[in-house]
Length: 375
Image 1 (tube, rainbow, N blue to C red):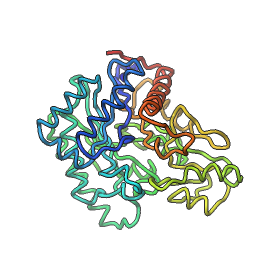
Image 2: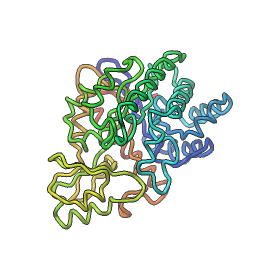
Image 3: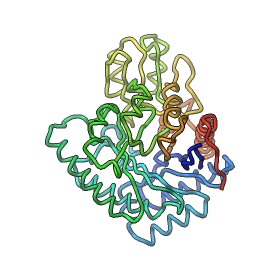
């Protein structure tokens, strides 16, 4: 979906397809038919933006002109457009156990550079004619351990190579580094040091609003530290105000699942790499958990979501006289690992859920003074 900010900026709102498992092109095309087009129809939108996740094998296949034309044709036929890609997971994002494997390869490895440049070349071939630019979100260098100075220097060299190659493309594509708890770049204050060392024309930040909430970051300070903001992921963190309460502990336990890492932070600064570790340690709250909760479907008490961080950051980014971001991506990839009572039962209910999240976000943007552009 498209919106016009009062300053004239065209803002694209997409949903991220990393919620769907696919490791080949046929799988990606099937997602468009089974989910993305029905979501567009449910919303009554003339055009729906999708933030594609293309696993490494799919990206290699799309280096072929015929394969890329096939994807481009399917997108057009279904009323879909692409201005942003999620380049964080490399492959196997829906394996039974992902956890820290999602950070491999990291930015010290040539495979990460080649994958990201491959995505950039694909994206320039998918961009709508009137899109100002494309964007690709990527991991915050890597997991924090081990990360000696020589690995940091190696990642910096790779980012320099990335910027030089992006400058050679026919259409502008920017890469957005996404801070995440537990990683080398965990917060926007650490991100600021990295951004000061790279070319800001081609490399900026991706603000995942769930991650900001888990880090108890102040929205205005985070946005100021993260400039240039290339992309924002509209996502909500799980919150437990009283984690020592037995009922709250039971409710939290239902979110401690085996596939994804659910980094947990307490307001007093205590940190755990996964929710199960936090539950074993215990202690006072509030806690915030890296578990992307559907935007429009908050959990039942005693749990909640950190919606204040979500709405306040959207306000900082788009509620002022100048739009500070033009690519938004709803990224709730956790639908099928939610506790059973909250989990969708099939394609139809997942379509309903994704459409509900996009409608929720649309309402927030309209309340901030943006105008929906119908095509």
